[in-house]
Length: 141
Image (cartoon, rainbow, N blue to C red):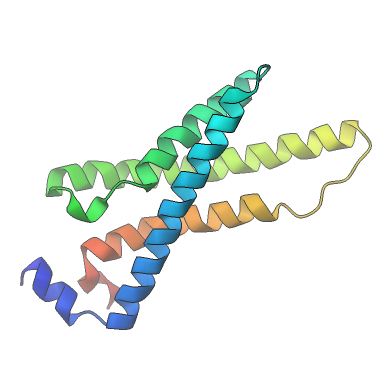
């Protein structure tokens, strides 16, 4: 069974859902890239902020990668990088929220629910199965 046959046998609604989820990942990649530029543009950034900007730049570039157009070996390497960088992104966002809470506590303030970071984590983690199912739709069964 060729890849085209597998795509034709998959549920069209599922394929549409995967396409929408993948576009959400590409949008996240662009948002991360713009966020990294804004961090780099600041004149006095800490070591953590510099690391965060470099990491989200790399991750943003990976998120906009056209995985479906890659050859099999390059896809496997890129997919492995996506899995690892997605897990690292979750830890990075958790650390970002923790540092923000500590800074707010020093000022005597309280932060609300970290909705932006939570949304980014959700979309980022969603990309791992989406990229896999776009490449191998027969695994959705």
